[in-house]
Image (cartoon, rainbow, N blue to C red; front, side, top):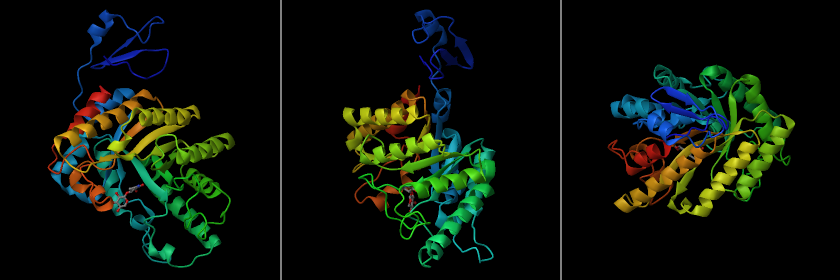
Length: 370
Ligand code: XIL
């Protein structure tokens, strides 16, 4: 039985394309007869199961892996969206200064976009402003704030204009806050910054304005990690988002990265996640779960089962919140996950194993979407 979260007054029961609309006020309590008549078939892919909820299932992709048939097959079968894991970041996409004949390297991202278009998938852009993966020509040249301001404006305009409507949403600014809710010291904020050092979220606002000017249709997100439940960091992000909405700064939503461990699986934490999503939704903003992975110390059966349970709970939290429009995993297979090289002693974070076998996490995600 699928009660879909289309709106509060209309119950839509999707069953093999059949849509039933209830005529009376018992929208969320259909009769047993209606339930029996409309029992939907179980969907077998993540994207099909998510579509009736208006949730896009997406994943981070390294375009180089598209040559691997199994990788491409799982990607095209299970996912409705892609995001380049690295290919649109400042360093990879803009490795040389504008004085060079070829300042930009759009080819890897283009390749991924072409794959997505061939398979009817959406493309999410990541990321325009970040303190990591910036090219040496930016970080090693001792530019002053005026120079950095025009470098960043030019970069955002060029990238967003280049991809145009082929990219439907961007992480405009990534990871700008510390865990205690203060702003992170970065080249773009205050080291030396683009001219707004010490002025709080003004540099973030400026980046959103530049991105919006380049493509008014693109959905613009602020994205961060460790800000999934209510805590100092998510409070700071919420305060910024509320301020942006109040003053008409073009922000569409908040990205919750969701690089988590099994420690996240407590009732308090999951309730806090739902409460954080709700307050974001109440601002009229969307929520994208942008980089979901759940790292483990072992791939024994108990760990994989615990991981599956938490994957299911995260997916369920998104299903429960109508403003949650995307669930994106940070990769497909454990073979290419960033986790082992980043978190010593951890691995096995994704829904497919190294041999492209579905792990229990896959089944739990699918179940949570049925
Ligand atoms: C990671 C990539 O997965 C790695 O390949 C790269 O070496 C470093 O960046 N938060 C983000 C992502 O916003 O861009 C990061 O991706 C993971 C953490």
